[in-house]
Length: 504
Image (tube, rainbow, N blue to C red; front, side):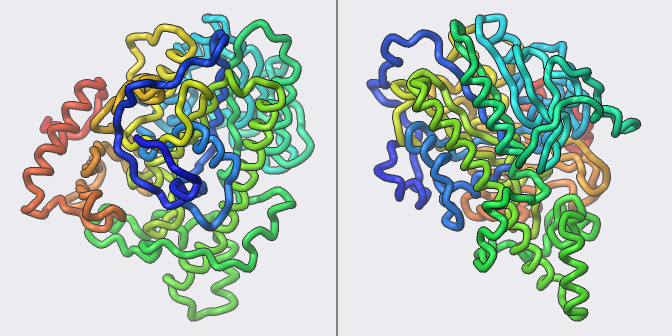
């Protein structure tokens, strides 16, 4: 890592090399235990933030966290779907260990989580925003949450005094009875609730507050102030927008990928029907390009809402004097596809969905303007927070504390990242994979023949357009990556069922 010279350096995406510093900054003068603010947004691609190189929109609040702390270039999710990724963050364990592997699966709230450990260690804990783990939140002194996605306008929230009825596939309505309705735009009113809690704290204990904004998750309904934002602007297209998937696994299911292919997405069906009605001869590529503009503008409008409300929180920390002793972390439950390969949504082990932003600030401890290049993971967040709180990290947590990296005392915590996405039907096949600094190997147990494997050389093919699985020049690379993947499966004790990989 290295220190950025100016904001322009960040915007241009300057590369940094991980390195230790001989004299790390001091701890906050006279400070006790640090406060913790973890902001976990929903579906935020790192490419949709100024400090990660985006020039289509401005994100001054998020850029500020980066400029006053550390920006991680390779923060990776081990399972890119909302429910399981949130469970990974809470537990510091991979999906197969915390028991939450699929979307809309009940989280076992009786198990160990970092909020519970902080609470037992003397912290006042709170949670605001999207929950999406079905079971009643545990480990929080106070919570104010939307059970599932929550409405964009006037959301219903649930607090400890309200009856908790879990959502289930068989009964999708009764769980939304009761609660309290907040009037206004979802992200604005949830941030107000969080600020109210901060302002009304009686003090005496350090706090850990989790703030979970709903945006930029769909629907792409912005606050009124951003309804016309970018309306007359043509957003540059990603070079892979019109990808035909030749030679790669999506080729086998290209016509049923309604969950994440722009031209097939139900979120854009009305817009597509309108385009086809206006121009009966429109081609699929033309549809994709038009839908991309509709999608990306709606997405960016929600990102602006996120940034505005992060700015409100940072302003209060400044005005209250809390900023100097508060560890601020901004991340997302996973990354997102911003039109790369003609995709939106997550659910693939490609670079866009796999990478979420990770920005961390703590004055006097984390040197300002740092950029870190090695791979870290959501599974590392729980150990990191516990170590900053001065509490022991349980042996059964599978992540690594990032505190040594943040303090300039370590270069990396891993040289390979594990990924396991569980099958959600034919449209979303199971994926088991490993990513190193240069290569990525993905195994699809449920696919057949040549569609079972993908091998990418990220140095020579950063857009992941060429599957090198059958390339004889990469035979030794594939063998090494397969062996690395098998070792990770064994080390992490993942009971995978993949005969083509494990040789069973």
